[in-house]
Image 1: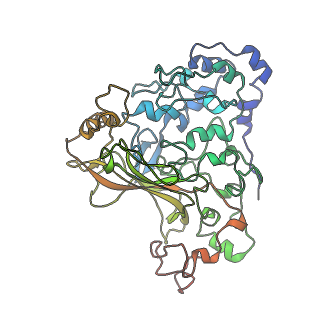
Image 2 (image 1 turned 120 degrees about the vertical axis):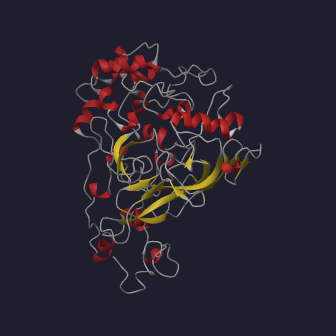
Length: 470
């Protein structure tokens, strides 16, 4: 196996090198601060290019230029639709709590203000930096809401102890997207902060002990790798062959499989190994009860304002052909309420020489759509006390739809219904070593896990002649 650089030369210079003074010097020169933006302003006195570099990334813009469904579009977290809390539009203070900026509370946020870049969210080493869940990206103590500002963060202490981003910095947001630990991805949760090799061989503290940057190599704050839902054209891939050879096994049968089967398929037999992940979300059940219901593991499986869910752990993935890009539903796109709408879906098939069989988490949902216009609605679900439009406060889908669609810029007919959807989440983490990987009969034979017909085969290719691509 080849050894990857943890950080590029440019990134090392930013994080710990020529421009950065020592920790002791930071203690002498940092602070005091009246606002979080003042922290950034002082950072920029030495790290002059840092904000501009960050502002050129999708972590800041929440969108990138892509080709999706054959069209050039700007797409990202800012305007993609999912089947969890559905959309950023009209729900900014809640959704932007994980933005790498300060104060994105509505559509008028200034993306050109360098002082609004949040340096601390990635560079905190104290473990005390907190951005409340509805604070529009402002840290505790600076949101302007008393309920969130009871325990303000110590900006001076945190700024005096900045350092290279560690796993817990990345996972503070990426593990908790969607409202809780491992809700969305399935293979990214807080167990990766300090995992054993049984959880993830690469990141295991008893094996290789990789940082996130070992694979997501960083230059000028550009971090490769995006969610397939928000970046379906696959323009910043992180692949296994960045470190491993195309034929790494030294065994012809296995290396021939590797031409058609992604490394992850064999090396990630299950995901959600430690913490269960959300597998279904049914908005049609919202508002139909008051009592919170929990499953045997303590997960909330019914909440009045959100509907009904299911959770699973040690999940066997679904398998699809994947050539590195995907199709996706776009806002305003026509849908058929009698069919399942794929909000994103991997591209490739058995005839595609660039495609490989890849594991995915398949998340299914039921969500609101416009019954006249036949497109999905971007409802306003979040609001502070006194908001007359937010569904979570008033349980009024019409008002929530009117406000949300106004923010999106699409008309709402006043008529709505609920339709089924699904989203695909590639499984890349929680890798097993060779001893823990799938064996032949895990996929082939009478009890194999593969749905061969769904993959385009007439039957198991090891059972029927002429069907195999292996």
